[in-house]
Length: 432
Image (cartoon, rainbow, N blue to C red; front, side, top):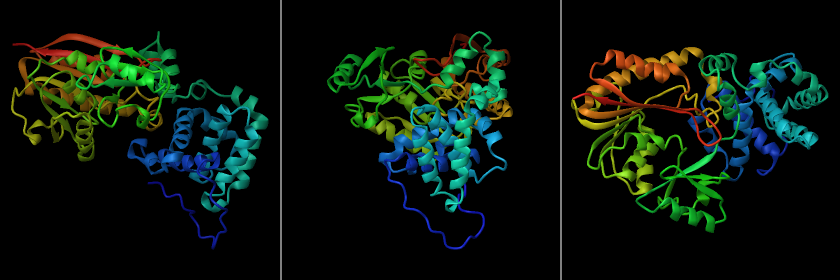
């Protein structure tokens, strides 16, 4: 955790009253604290948002996610306005205020005043004047500052990431960037053991939620809602899962009674989808004990059962795998998450070019170690949520050249768009 306390001792401080939880100042203050933690290298996946009081969490999440999506732009806009880098949480507050100014264009003075109030709660309130001055200078120079932005800042992507998208997807990079910069869609997967998509669509309609069927078990909500508002969610009628992610169970499609391994299974969405489709002898494996507990919790809500094991998919002997133990394997391997950055906007700023190669080495090791656990004639689905070829088609092509008893059955690259996130799938079969 980033230490947000003042670095020097200033004696007793007279702090103003905390802003009310439903105010913009409250959201900016809490959002700035979380953004500062990300700037220091902490992932949003570590649960900082869960520490925010529940009533204020949606507003704080909007501030955090919106600011991080536009981080490159905000960073470039602040550079000429700041002589010296301020206290980390104050810089994060300024970035959050710039995001809110960009989205509340009819209320700039309200945003500035609320940001100054938020500054009163950070670093002993010593930077209220700086926040006020920087934001008012920005409003006076906004047009010229925006005109001076380079492509990386204007398109909200790190320069190396943008160049890679342009090289890897020359015909689609602009669509990928647009999808990365947008809020993600909310899609559901209906638990077929509880009812049909048509049944659930009727329940949504009765609750005043507009939606439409998509795929074999999917539903696309026209507007996102909290899961607490979804009818039957607690009873396991439905799960939140991107339409692209739902493709994994459809492609692997193990026969009823099959012995199946879902490697790198947390949080368990694909595990659950496989079990909703057929009765299976399924082992769900993940390296993180806390995430294994999350798999168990999700399966319990849905009324499903699997053997959940904690272990490293690249070291099968450590978790007790026998050779040729499985009829089907889902290898949803760790990756750069370059296909889902709109859901994880911190990822594109925390990742470095070397990380793509590091993930590729891990993926290669997992593929090679899992392959002996597959029965002759069995199927392995290699899956990532990446759009980078080194992790996808390039990885599979190398594996096929090294592995004489493997053949490629099918291959799909889903690029992020309005309806779904970005995923890659390669279905491999072991020759008899």
